[in-house]
Length: 202
Image (cartoon, rainbow, N blue to C red):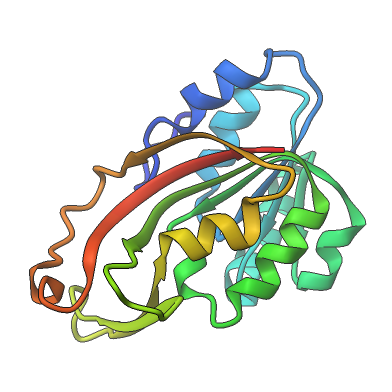
């Protein structure tokens, strides 16, 4: 009942303890969650939390086996983005995931619609405009060769004002220190790139 796997936000559980009391009943939505130990520690800290996880089918199928074999209560799997609307969520967590979703704008609008209160992004690549008009820049991630991924760098002003300008306030924004990401090869073309954590409150 202690998280030992890698997490892009090592202070997530302490952050939740500042927001919720131990015996609070609340819905936690984990977008991109992929390790069972986070759920176990979360349930240890908050016995009445209802946990929902949205991810790729291959990951959710493995979770389904674990859920059945261990009779995990309040562990809910969401296979389709449309099923997100079946509940509202008090805390939505996106751990270094939004930049890998092709149509992330549609997902954000859906999450804003089903959010009761907090939406938290950790490990997100954001940049200042620096004269660039593009809202997103597609980059190639090669630090896990031979596996190659493509992802977005997102313009901070567009990200904040386009999605969180109405009805939300920023609680904090800080640099994420879990990855020593090297942006030197972008210095001449993109300004102010930072691996960012940001919490919004409705």
